[in-house]
Length: 319
Ligand code: MRU
Image 1 (cartoon, rainbow, N blue to C red):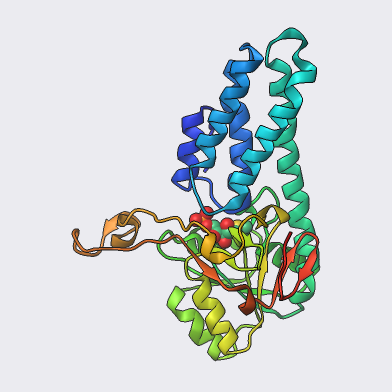
Image 2 (image 1 turned 90 degrees about the horizontal axis):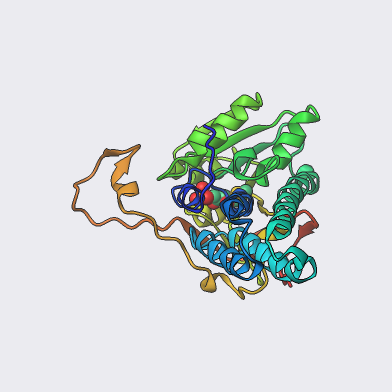
């Protein structure tokens, strides 16, 4: 589904309701959305316009708390607005600043594309001919501006003629695995099998998985990783059965300002996402439900963190 988003509220709502989701994609969408939301105000004086840039960036940045790419992209846009405004202020209007912000958003998008390719190249040796890859949530083209993070290596391996098979956890409660990962891979003619999240440990135990590849929403300075709820359970099972567990992220997902996983804000989503399946109630309406959207996997359990700069190994020290 393609949606045309222009106003601040349209973009904020699309991010908050996961119409656009995936850490890199929401950073790119927010940067682009910030520009479109500012466009009607280009005739304002620079002072009020710069205040508006900050206010819009704050509103978009608050749409979801866990993926650092969103805050990172908004901070980058605000810094560009601050640095760009004075020297170009001849007319007093904000038109030139708006154009600079459009350039910055485009750069964020293009850099994300390039980072996806680089992640894929660094992770390619993890996906040899015949590899059986287990993944969680959606980390492909629908989650980024490019070919994805964890799925980038799968796409590149397939393009090279390697026979790759993917097992995708359905990813309750919003089913990004069944709805997005399975759809993307089927479009690309890459064999994919969806499983209930609870089936993953038994597949790992049975030796039916060669490598686990997942993405992340934030990587703390010590390598602790926040990713879609259920990732930690996969890491525990992979460690128990000695299956390599890799996290693939662009550098924009690394957050050196967050010392460890305990400092990462975990998004709590509406209880009805648990009480319902695809909008159909399946439990007593009043039953208490908990819906954390992400969990934290300790860096020490992660075989390697693949970024666009290479493969990083424990002990992680991101700066
Ligand atoms: O709630 P979502 O669908 O935005 O969660 C997305 C994930 O957890 C992804 O694994 C993560 O953002 C990495 S995407 C390349």
